[in-house]
Every structure is written in C-alpha cells, then in structure tokens.
Image (cartoon, rainbow, N blue to C red; front, side, top):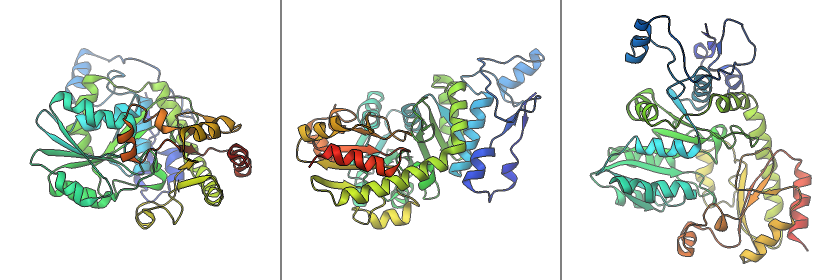
Amino acid sequence: MAQKDDWTSATPRLHPETLLVHAGGLRSQFGETSEALFLTQGHVYDSAEQCAARFDGSESGFIYARFSNPTVQMFEQRMAALEGAEAARATATGMAAVTAALMGLVRAGDHVVSSRALFGSCRYVVEEHLPRYGVETTLVDGTDLDAWRRAVRPTTKAFFLESPSNPTLEVIDIAAVAAIAHAAGAQLVVDNVFASALWQKPLALGADCVVYSATKHIDGQGRCLGGVILASRAFIDTHIHTLLRQTGPAISPFNAWVMLKSLETFPLRVRRQSETAAQIADWLAGRSGVRALRFCGRKDHPQADLIARQMSGPSTLMCFEVGDSRAEAFQFLNRLRIIRISNNLGDAKSLAVHPATTTHQRFTPAQRAEMGVGEALVRLSVGLEHADDLIADIDQALGP
C-alpha cells in the first residue's frame, strides 16, 4: 500500500532545490528510495462498495490512468510545490495543457483576449480552434496595456499570453494584465515555458493559471513529451479536472516518472544554461553581422526594467538576426557543428532554429512581420556545453 512521504508541506520555507528532490513523495510498502514507476492502466478494489465509493468521490484513491496515477500524482505535486500552486494536473503534451486550460474556461458565446506574439501552435488554438466552438478571440499587442483594456467585452472570460514570447522574447507585464483581466471578470492564463518556473512566478504576479510544456526545461534532455497546468485548487476543480477526466489528454506514467526524476536536477541545469546564455549574448552583442539581439539578461532588452521587476533570472534562450535574409540565416545554421538544428528548446544540447520556416511557417509574411519574426531571425536555446565551445562554434558559423 503506497504511503505519502510528503513532509515538505509542513515546512513551507524550503528552497526549490530541496522541494524538487522531496516534494510529493509517495512510497510503496517496499520503502524504495527512488520514486516508483506505477506503469498500470487501472486499479483493483477490495469490494464493490469501495469501487463505488472511489467513483462517487466519497473515498479518495486511484481509479484509472486517464483520471489519475500514483506516479503522475507525484509529478503534479512536485510541480505545484515548485510553482507555489495549490494544485496541478499533468497532460500528455504542453499543447494539451494550453488547450485544456483555455477550453476549460470558455463556452460558445464567450470571448478570449490574447497577445499576438505566440508560439505557432498556441496562436492556432486561440485564433482558429476556439472560434470553431463559438468562442470569439481578439489578438492584441501584449506590451500595450491599453490594447488589453480596449479589447475587453462583456463576454470576455479569459486572457492568454506568453512571457517571454516565442521566439522574439517579448516580455509582458503579467501583474498589470492580470489586474485588467480581473477588473473585467476574466481569468489570466500564462504560458511560462520560456522563463521556466525557476525564473518567473506568474501566480505570484496575479495570474490565475500557469501552463508548461514539460517537454522543455522540465525534462530538459529531449526524451519525453508532457505538459502541466497549475492553479488554485478551485480553478483546477472547477475548470480542469472534469475536462481532463472526460476527454483524456493524460500523460503516460512513464513520461511522468521521467519528468519527476528530471526535476531533481532542474535548478542545476537551468541555472547553468542561463549563465552560459548570458556569456554568449554578451559576446554576440559585439559581433559584426549580428543584429536585433534579444536576451532577457541584457540591459538593452526593450523591456529590461519590467524584466528586473518580474523575472529573477534571464532564461536560456535568445534570438538574433544574421545578416538580412533567409539565405544568410540558413548559411549560419548549416555551418554550426556543436549546436544542432532543432525546433525543440530547453534541452541539455544547444539547439538553433529558423522560426520563419518552422515554428511560425504557417503565418503569412505580414503576420510574421507583425510578430517580429523576420527572415533573418534565428532562435538559440542554450544547453549544458561549455560556453567557450559554443562561442567558438557560433564564431566559425558566422564567418569572417
């Protein structure tokens, strides 16, 4: 019989490093040191009465892997401890988390306001998927607070944003947007994947819900897909729990176990990656042929003052333009030796991509220009390699 081993809830002042090793513990009768992988679809009951009690909610316990699982629960509780959330629900992918968080808040006739600088799939959900179900949407310049206010309607139920955004690292004032949302009777959902839970806490800034692609920094080693939704217990119970239970975007227990173990090294990895990213950004800032560099750790970022208030670290990503054309960007990417071309991010391996032809390829040139995604733009996700080796690789790829 599994027993809870989560003594961390009684000591709320623990640091993230400690929480990410111990929070959400659940040990079986065998007393294992490492968290167990409960790779099971279902569970058996001592009696028909107990089975009925599990289903009507009068007895707590596990029923079916689509609803809950001991390993998944440990991952959810550990993420909640890191984020400072009352509750969490894991999903099969980050996009499943985004979609469920938004669809759980709205129904036909409702209205959503979203920043327009979004990952391509996130913008698809807002701009094309939700309207199929009678939910109207408005896209705004996320840095313009008056634009958020002007977009509000009597039917507005949700605000959505990424900060920093993918791929241009646009930073939005989360606290100010949350206040506008709440004044309108709406709730704010924040995709925090670029900042990571280490460097930004949207719930503390007033957001109602935070979503992550756990595929990124949380796994951080290019192995498994996963997502997570974090919020108050009331938000999860009211808007998320039944939707996930009935529609089924459940994370595999194996993937949840991989994420759970990855969280033990999460602060070490993200801090090291961020430190290396800062070194690379400072080097790039003085390199000829590189334009429009954006990194959240530099004072020349357009929202540097906001970043200083809102984020405690710079993240692991940057973007910059190589020359003036797609051909020059492609030439740079093709010359890289250590850094690999990939549309993933937050990995132990450094990865670079051309957003205009990958993550944002489905948009028109005008839409990409509106989001700041130009033909020469490259996004770089910094890994765990030595900074000197990465700088040397970028240097030779840029050419003389």
